[in-house]
Length: 168
Image 1 (cartoon, helix red, strand yellow):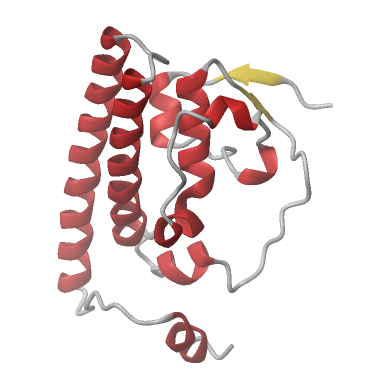
Image 2 (image 1 turned 180 degrees about the vertical axis):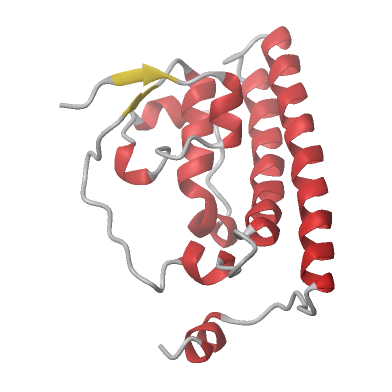
């Protein structure tokens, strides 16, 4: 059996490596205060945003064993979108992180409005989010510079093109 351990503010925002859907379960009522996730955003960020919302609603524990089997395959969104050979995915992951942090900021304000958190807790979490945004922004610029210096270009392509280029 896995053991549970509490997550802290920094860990929930910066994303613990085991904070994935197969390790999560919570009551729907814990998330009732929050609006439905935007469908264009939900596919890429639901694990992270739903965990943050649950954290705002009350303490959570991370169980270090899967609750269900996790399916891994080469066409997963994060594999397709963020595989940057030789660059550890820093551009793509940090760009995604900026979108996550923006959603967290909105949820933080919602949690304050719903009286799930105090003004002091809101301020503390907002400070961590702000520092995380600054870090991700610096990493995007650094990754862009590394790519450019290596003769590579950041480009946006659709899923089918990525699959075709990878021989899938």
